[in-house]
Image 1 (cartoon, rainbow, N blue to C red):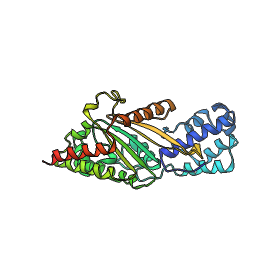
Image 2: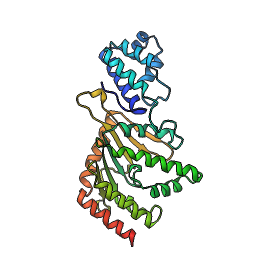
Image 3: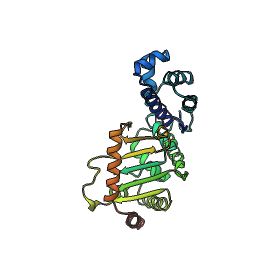
Image 4: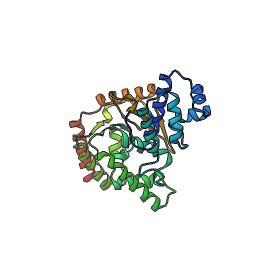
Length: 290
């Protein structure tokens, strides 16, 4: 069992690993709690990655030990618990608490699949576009707070410098034509998309207006963030992130994940290929540059 990055990504791996160990040992959650000398609520908390309360090394050792885990498995879980509070975004006031998990997962992921139908995804925004976007949505925030959020968003984009991470973004044409910040900001933003699309670990496709109804149906922005490890399944992780007005919703149920992954696959076939998408980006940028 390998260790992974900090925060929610680590907590998800802890939860899934503990469930797998418990099921391997043929224990119910109540049995596990009894053998580990803790309450059933505590055992349940360690199997629920979105639980915010702190995990401890002694308790994870007790729970894993009660499942007859090997010494190597116990130490791997202990390392994950130690890592849970690492990461620049932890307790950063510029990152909303509900968004902590997304940044954590992006840091640990090897793929991020995005569908956007309103705004350019945060990982692909320019500072000027992010500033205009935040200024429009955070109408009650003071300028200093907005500036901190823009800075945090730019820092979050550092994950795209990793060669082991692939970003696949499908943008509706509406995203490109929604004038955020004015023509100059949009021209710069689309030029940035063109530059990003040239990277070997970034794929950008455009879903044009004339494509009509798509596999996304009436769905809004969603991201599938994950890592697949066939050699060590417990090192794999994946979540679907849905961005709502005041919070983020994280789906890790296998059926939900499968449905969104399939939707993204269908959208790839319905969108323009990468060559045609780049031509569309260039054409729209030139329109904003007039």
